[in-house]
Each structure stands twice: as C-alpha cells, then as structure tokens.
Length: 249
Image (cartoon, rainbow, N blue to C red; front, side, top):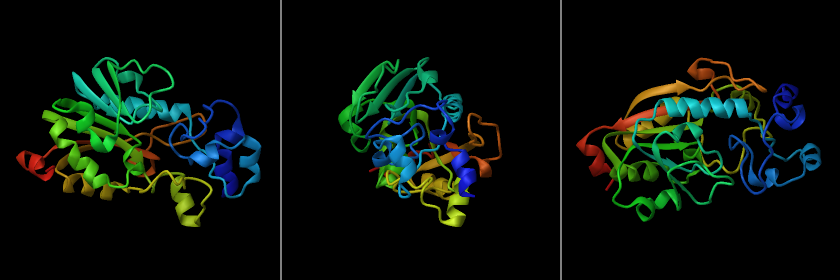
C-alpha cells in the first residue's frame, strides 16, 4: 500500500508539479513546512519526512469548483497568497493574507492581515461572497473564525470554502493503516469529515446549501468522483437569518 501512495507522490514521479516553497506548504497544503524546506534527497532518505502529494491539475479543478459558487460583485478571499484563484478576477476581489503572494494575484486589492482579525483589515465593509480555500483546517479556533465572518457578509451573502476530506481517497488508506508519512502535516490542526463540517457551519449561524466534490486525486489527473471519494470538498453556505448576526457577537 505504501508503494501505491508513493506512486501518487509528485516528488517521485517527475516535474509536472510545482516545487515546494521553502518554509511554506505545497500546492494543496499537504506537506509540513519543515519537509518543504528539505532537499529532495533528504526527503527520500528520511522515514519521518511528510511527503507532499498534490498536482496542479487537482488544484485547478478545486479553484474552478470554488469560483462556480461565487456571487459578486464584492468578494473577499482569505488566505489566498499561496495560490490565488484566477477565476475570481472577474469580481472586485479583496485578498487578505499574512503574506503577500509571490506574484501578482490580479485581485482588485491585496491586504496583509490576520484572518482572525478581519476588523483590522476590512472594517465596515461587506461582501457578497467570502472565500477561503484550504484554510480552516489550519486554524486553532475554527468556530470563532466562522462566527467572525457574519459582520462582513452582505444581505443574502454566502461563504465558499474547501477543506480536505479525511475519508476521501487516498487519505482514508492512511487512516486505516495508520500511515504518518502521507497526509499528516503538522500545519493542519483539524480534519473535517463532511457531516462534522456541516454541523460546525450550522452551529456558527450558517445554512449549508451545497457540498461539491472536487474529484479523485491521481497523478496528473483529477477525474470526477462521488463526494465520499473526493480528496477535497467545497462547501457553500449562507447566513441562516437574523440569528446569525447575534451568534457572531
């Protein structure tokens, strides 16, 4: 089974994938920063290294899936710098991240700031859609973060997020066999199965209106698949009503 997972790993299969950025996560945030900073030969020789698994094809499919659920004209993209979504350029998109992107995002505005302190970044502004892809699993207090979004949503606004599915392929294999080399980054504080992600959104004043499959994660391919097999899932939710504002306080 290890050999099957190794076959899916871009570091072992060629250069069709983006190189890790030292000190930061890889394309889909599936590798810890320490492993990203190591030379390739050290990754191969270290049993403790967390091996990056991901592909441009899969990331592009996820970005398109997110963009299809976005309504404008005002969009807030949180935690965008590692992989800006080019499909959001048709909106007036404001990007907020702790760091600036390595290359211009094409967004209307780029703001350096903390996702847990949006008031310091976009105080008094409201957005039709708030987007945060592959972010919530990195936060120590996801309930607090979700509640903090309500004051920044316009009437009828929505949030669109993506996060890894721990029961999707091939991550579920690692869970079953207790494999810690793959899909076990220390940058992720939590892992959210679909039912529990929905429960968390409902508990923080949102109503889930759609859950979308990104697809099956394979080397260089990202074919469609049912939600339970998808490595990443996209959630679309809207405010439940006047109570949502109260829950945010």
